Image 1 (cartoon, helix red, strand yellow):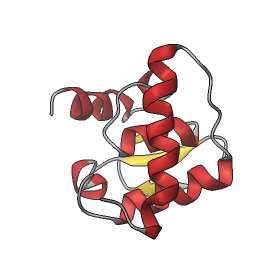
Image 2 (cartoon, rainbow, N blue to C red):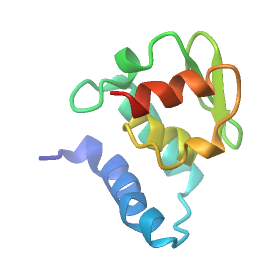
Image 3 (cartoon, rainbow, N blue to C red):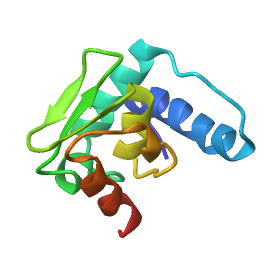
Image 4 (cartoon, rainbow, N blue to C red):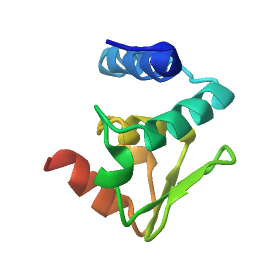
Length: 109
């Protein structure tokens, strides 16, 4: 069940859950993706992103958004939002010294 604070992340992420497997582009509005990433980073259940990705710095290359500290994983805010919510679908869009560690954390549980 969602609440009013989670509507934007829900819409953006679940839209990608549908579009990516179908090979259909579905751009995310950057301001909405930034707001969603900030929300997901600060919330606990169901993502626990801040705890799960502890020791990594996430940096958007197309927006003014960073979180965490450590080796950096950088890329488009949309790819970071998907990673924050545990989705591996956009990992190929992330680079940096922390990108491989982030990928391992998402793909090995």
